[in-house]
Length: 607
Image (cartoon, helix red, strand yellow):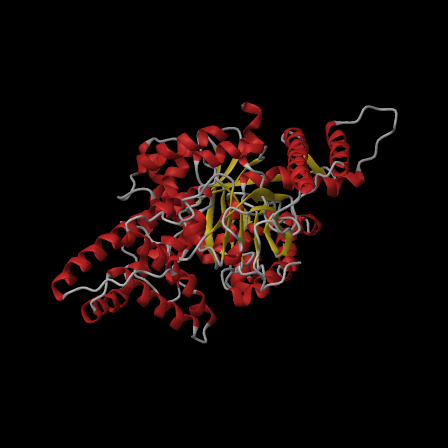
């Protein structure tokens, strides 16, 4: 392996070891990404008469960045989900921070230097100050401050894309000290082949975004990235966590062949897996999809989803400058759900609150947003939001096989209050002569420790349950997934909650009701066998991950396949044999996290 202090020549072959973050392989050329916050600017002195002009230029840049962040928030909401887009709402708040602006304004007036130099100085000081605090929670926000500073500097420079992750040549492999959320969300995925960083974690926003975009990612390399010449040819092996600098002819020949072979094997298995029912002792195992948009639903159907385990309605509100009307919501949902007309759809009530706000809703900010007015708590505080959604969902129930999911339930009274509003809206529709399904089901999302403790009471007033493990693990372990210093605690929480999940699944089944898991744990291939072992029959994951989860389940079940040699194998048995042959040919499921099947795997047959 390469020494951390070496300077890489333009021809020397070296192998760098890192930590695999997102599975995958890539062959490309080094694109060295330099943080604009550390770039040296030419000193530009001002006279007092120029200060007002610089302030106006600064305000214009702030407005531009605010709009850019809104665009990123919308993009991430559609590509992944609204929760992962929250980070850009937080960035907008930082950008509009009064104390931060006063600091910059004072610097301009007293130092009489350009806005670029003052902004760079102020954001560097703020980041350093925040990193020096004792609080892990506060210290982690330093990355957010740095991210906002980068974007503001880019806007001031006049070319926001200069040396950015958007300005990429074909077949680029990004090498950087770190990538912050806006860097990753802005990637030109047609040109970027892989990401390599010095800093990074499995649960960071950048890792989650890269995973959703299916970009191979290796981090924690112990090499000065500036020593790698721009344009150097590299191979990134995201399965083993290695980077080969200046690969030899044999490697340049073998890696593309390996990638193509695995691609071909996956294509074959994906096509076969889509329509095969999975059963364990006669009970159907369903792999459903988490979706946020029409495109997500189309991909879910293409990937062979058994249904929609979670439909997030937040984008319908976030993309609207004004409060959406009932007819607008109804029309948009009919358009999207028409592509899953024959499937069961769990549609979630609006899940906002804390630092997830809406431009047209006056929500008082709170100190600890994760512990405040979230999910159903906020909807009960603003009942007009709840009433309209319930009315729309009831109307949809005559056209689609929908069920209603209530977010962030903690107490039985939460569900009883929703049931009360539910009954009121049913009565209104009856009086108006508008048809709806009288038996529309209402389910609770289990996302808090309190809900786990009160599971019997919640089952009394819920028709089904869905476990949101992302927030549940965070609350159980008091460890945010973005907190690098406590990432080991968050990871440990995934294991620690299994016994509690087993209890919830067992009690739900005993009542003759369904229980699903829709958090990232359901899509983590390391946990598929464990989740089957505790009795889970309903998985809900990102659409592109569905074939992988189904394959993993089939592998778990295929030991039970017994067939006489003389009879023709059934489709599930044939696929099990195909998978065994694919293993021999080098096909392997991705290790570790929620790696996805790239879109090209799903659409290549249409070309």
